[in-house]
Image (cartoon, rainbow, N blue to C red):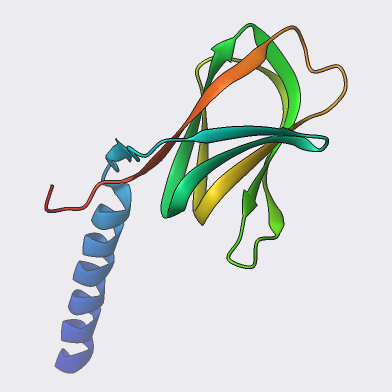
Amino acid sequence: MNRWRCLLLILVCLSQMSCAALLTEQVYVLIDRPVSEKMTFHGEIYSLPERANVRKVVLLGSGKIRNIEVHVRDKRNQWEPAKKVPGGIEFPFEIPLIAKTDAIKIIKHSMTGAGRIETIQFYTVADKGD
């Protein structure tokens, strides 16, 4: 019986430590690389020179836009849907992501509003040593 108490105590301690690790606030760092922009028939593509672990994207612009979709390019150079924002947004607007990518495509559907995206910022999570 004493073994079970010890095991239970260890499990409680481990769960408390793992919960504490999950609840710590993440510090985001701007990926300081040039972002190129390309207009296509299917949306606007914002590219980094190389793949990075993207955890957050910040859209900068003016006005208000509505009804956008965010797609990320995977390692096979295919576009995968990441987020859909059906409501109206004001700038700056943060979109949380978890992706290893070098490009984001933003598709603005009809009736998107009277705003425009001027630039995009890619963020990653800071290392614990920083």
